[in-house]
Image (cartoon, helix red, strand yellow):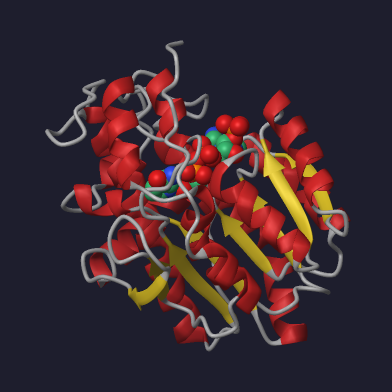
Length: 334
Ligand SMILES: NC(=O)c1ccc[n+]([C@@H]2O[C@H](COP(=O)([O-])OP(=O)(O)OC[C@H]3O[C@@H](n4cnc5c(N)ncnc54)[C@H](OP(=O)(O)O)[C@@H]3O)[C@@H](O)[C@H]2O)c1
């Protein structure tokens, strides 16, 4: 593995003000994927400080252990519960469900599908799917399906539950969500080109996954609306945020060190990048079908509508059918 890059250490400008404006989350249970670093870590910390019971879904690693210890230290009143869940494996996702259900018999208020990888090599998972698509979308689709009864329980008892997906500006780097990226074709989906701006295969696959996050939200929102459900489907993007994402991509050969160091100076802090999912999790004013994030690559997390590029009947049906095929289960939204 290569060396990482030198982070610019950007200052937070907006996060504290947002945090102060949020209500208590006491009595709520929030499940978040990918909390070892980045936006997932900051969202978990914020939810803990606001009084939520926070379930941390991570693949087993030293990073998972140390971030859990760090969260407990940073938040003396926090209630954090780590559970193993490797999004590269459908079996691992299935295995974590009974542990979540045992831990949360009260139901789940929020599932935040945050974890992600970026511009990895053209590699299949053990299940045969593109490593980026399975980690970023397909496993989150399965997780959502399997936790649906817990979300419904909360929605019926308390009048609301939420699914918050994490997309990216990279959803706009590809024209259309293409079905083959959701098929069992991992390792033969465009090769290892690393050019972000000139069609490198690593980046096209990443763009497809982030478009999938938004399309999943649109498809879920449409189903929820037609059933009059009290569950909300929400999607956010963090702009360009200084997390571990770019560092990992440099180490995995998908970005150059020097370029990344310069490029990241244009971005925003990890905390500011977390504002979109945090509003999705905790801001009472957010409705189903809302997209939350900065207008460009940085700034306050504003709200806007889902976009026609993926919020249309063809793409909504395609992503649902292909994702159900991949997980080999129907996902019926009642
Ligand atoms: N940072 C940005 O500028 C930016 C821009 C647009 C969108 N996003 C999105 O923001 C989300 C969070 O990323 P981040 O920027 O906070 O990056 P990050 O610091 O690298 O965090 C990513 C998290 O995902 C976890 N993860 C990766 N593979 C996993 C797997 N197989 N199973 C379980 N967890 C896994 C990582 O855990 P490990 O420690 O196990 O690797 C880590 O906790 C991602 O969906 C990303 O696409 C970020």
